[in-house]
Length: 143
Image 1: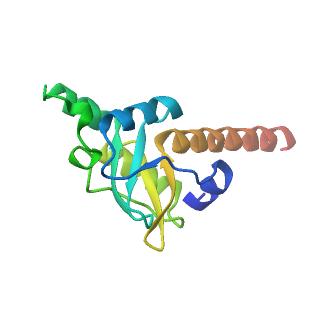
Image 2 (image 1 turned 45 degrees about the horizontal axis):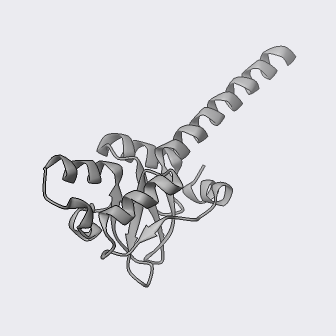
């Protein structure tokens, strides 16, 4: 299965912020939407970074004064690993596991087109395993 197939099923909505928004605004957004990351984009929809719960926790742990008033551009992860719609879920799963992150933006023609989470990948994998098990049961029953 490809990233495109998952996006076609789950939708392409992505929570985004501009680089000048505050960490406080980002934290409220993460809480409100019950998500683990927001993608930072410019006005044209180009990906500039990603801000995760982990990024916010790291800056708070440093004990800096007034961290929640900082712009997300100071805290976000700038080197964002992205994927394309043609990537397979197995490719995405391997990258996420090896590089230890949970959200991967999807880019089409240089712009944000969706996001894949480790939850999406696990859900797909579980459905695949269940489907394979059912096929084996049917094969045995009819063999």
